[in-house]
Length: 223
Image 1 (cartoon, one colour):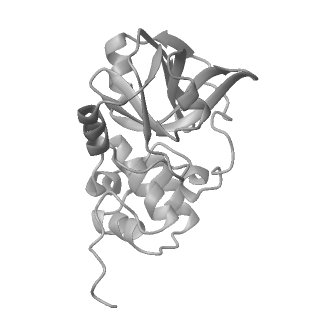
Image 2: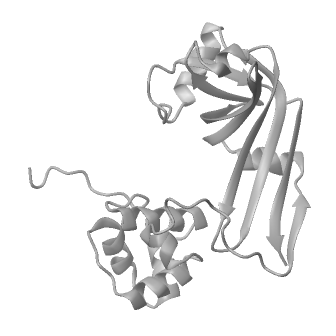
């Protein structure tokens, strides 16, 4: 019914274009006014793009993409089905090692990562929604899944980020023993900090955890 919809927040758009604009702006830590200043408009127009089914002109999209340090293709979703990292690297690109402190900061508190395990059929790499709880990395799976059967073995966990527009990125890898979480208090804490259900769907309530024995990372930057 009209008038009953919740007011849209500044961080979430209502259309695909609006969501991408809001997500990129939030990633950069910019306000709508700051984005407007960068592309020669005001905050109300940025709000309109994020909250309404807008159809901006090609010129407006170019200016907006430039203000957000990205491309028109990224904003409009033209690259959604393409793997990241297709752009040509800058001539002064450099690969630098990250400190453990920086690695842990980049892991943040939640996201999507990949777990590498050994199976009877050979190695397997499986994506998971994860959370960080203290020093531990935890995720949910089903009790009969490959990941659950890998309890007690050493695994590698990897998470990365690719910024195609800036041709930069980083990756962090943690190695440690994978264990099933059975303590009632620990399970309650993990359920409390989980931001969402696993994207894979299904009955995935079996928590697994690893405490990194070593954690390393690298970043691609340009000077």
